[in-house]
Length: 320
Image (cartoon, rainbow, N blue to C red; front, top):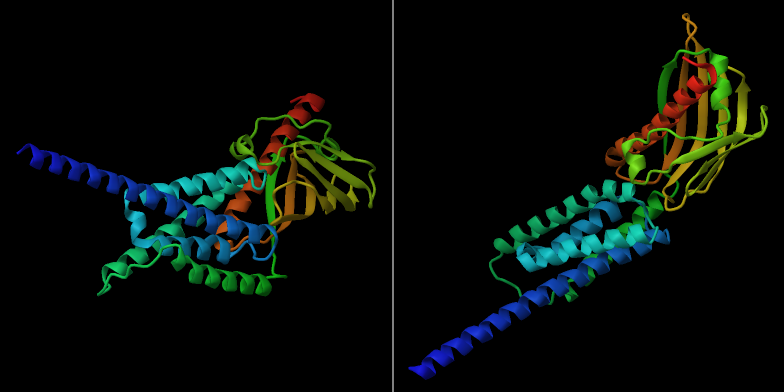
């Protein structure tokens, strides 16, 4: 009787050890595959071998989810995937490769294809007549090769296809056009309440200095993490200030490029001024249907910060 109890106890202990070992193995394999896929994909992106498009944001996470497949629905494999995503995003953030805003915006675009890939593989395996036991790591080779082919092809096809976008924001101010123009052309210190995205890590302008009031003059806007240098292309005092962006030195944003900055000033009948701020930029991010609305929000928050500071400066300078 005692021997049977000891045998049963040993059997349960061995089974528990096997289960624990299997769970640890699932966690480790899922983590290794996920980090390898994401890291290699980002390295290819960083060295411009693939573009900021469907291949990286949609196809790579989809095949990652598909490769992990049915096993990802098990708890420890799912934890491995979540752990890998957290580690990957933290490495981008603390390595100054991307900012918090960019990472938060990219998260849904990456996570949804992963989940879609997992679900499709789950149903494929569920309705297979035979369960095929494949080495999970070896099974990643072909999908990753397909990703490489897709990524290289997309990069070649989209090489000179950058989206050019214009964002326009207007504000009516109880001051004359000349007063508004004189206050905005050069700003010694920008210090206003920050919009939400700036509280994360959207670039914060500190000052903008116009060296001379003439066409061809340089206007430099300094940020906490760099600067934007503009050249005046049109200037009518109290009416128009148009500038080309000739240098852009903000880190971690290879996919983004400012093209033009414009201020227009319209004198209204009641003596007030309608000022319009126009930012023109190019972006390599695809799919545009997803990225453009998010880019618009970011640019509008930059405009909002400048407008808040302008209102403060006008009150300090002219009262009201």
